Image 1 (tube, rainbow, N blue to C red):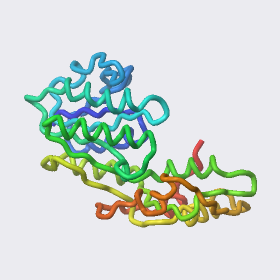
Image 2 (cartoon, rainbow, N blue to C red):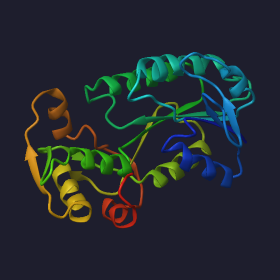
Image 3 (cartoon, rainbow, N blue to C red):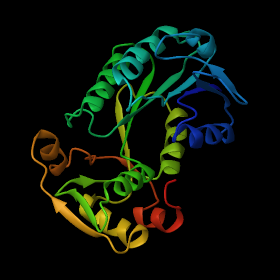
Length: 253
């Protein structure tokens, strides 16, 4: 099929594109600049060239996001622009990448991701919303940033279930080949952890002299994560564990 990936140059998109190609899809990689083999230009923030980029696409995997900039413009308004630009006569499946907990964790970015989901559910397009837990690489980066000399402070009681990004990419290819669900499905890593346990395993590999310090985090966000809002009740699961990731991956640059 003719497939288009938004966010093709991101952490997930770089793993997703070759897997779609291996599954027999002809893949276009959408970005603002449209550079590189298979690259097409399309800007979710402005709508520039979106219709041209999406023309003829039978499968769209919408992995683009802007967590550090303006997610309301890119994730929400950009998803609305995407809905308006798709070729409805050709589209068979739009797979949207979201995050486990967007409906329960009161972070501003998560509210934007949840709003983007509602845009798609109201669009009457053939959609599947895939909520995924945090990637191992992201957790690795956060823990490295959190370390303060000999101390590694982490939130007390938070529960997480991080996932391997390659497992997530493979799962998305599988979802794209199926009939649209018309709703939400979830994907997570094989094991649930407390953030403190995650940090201890990280410190043993990345910073053996660091001591993990669990710190209470008040407020609604802390309460939601202690109650397991970032852990799916029912989900397909990847194969690669946090320990396997730490043993094989170099530290983030």
